[in-house]
Image 1: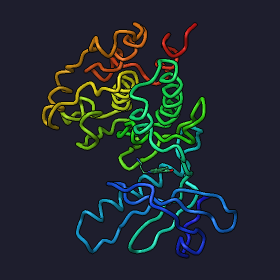
Image 2: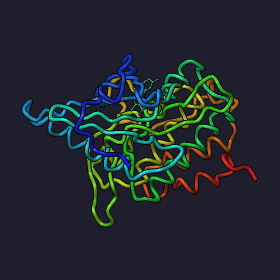
Image 3: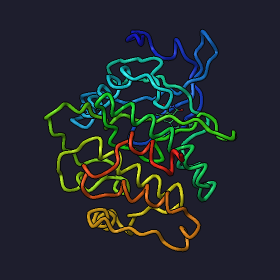
Length: 278
Ligand SMILES: Cc1ccc2c(c1)c1c3c(c(C)cc1n2CCCN)C(=O)NC3=O
């Protein structure tokens, strides 16, 4: 169980280099003094006095922690320890030495269909587990898919960053305008009720990127990207998709569907002939 510790994180962990920073805060590699095991420590400033922005971050982190504590799946990031003090919260998380899937694709330009399927199957198993517990991630993108190790034949992945995740209470329509333009579904832009289907649209975008290195809706500006998403305006550019299988294109077509209810669910994706050939 993850206890709320009164001590400072530095009593229990030796802080090492910064792994990344961004809206989520700062993430540092660290080593647990008692075991010598390496982890990732995510620091989020939550000092209330700096205006509502900090307060909002604290709420997001508290929601993320509540969700993470409840989850136990090989493809979902595990919370190992938690420290809160007035000015900040520190989440100690499994270390994913392989870094982001985003960087992995960038290095390789694009993946073979077999490699893409390896990643997608794990992402879909993690998302199927989340949706089965009525949790939507709402920020699925290659930056939030981390690799345990990267120089291995079949890298293991975990989904991270549940800062925008929500428990989907039946009947409660959740609307929110956040997420990253390239990956957000039409209903997010139209401020319509969001659901687990919103995550499935993002998986369609991620699949398109894994196979081509291209982002299907990206425009010159965010505004252009958002209007491309609303029009559902994407195509399989011949130059990039000439040797992509029809099965793979069908998989993407059945996710990049404007109507949320018409998109495949994670479970349906896992038995789609492209993922689960007979
Ligand atoms: C090797 C490496 C490099 C950058 C990392 C991480 C690991 C990392 C990690 C985590 C998070 C939330 C962010 C992380 N970042 C920041 C970027 C995440 N999109 C995490 O939970 N475990 C990580 O290893």
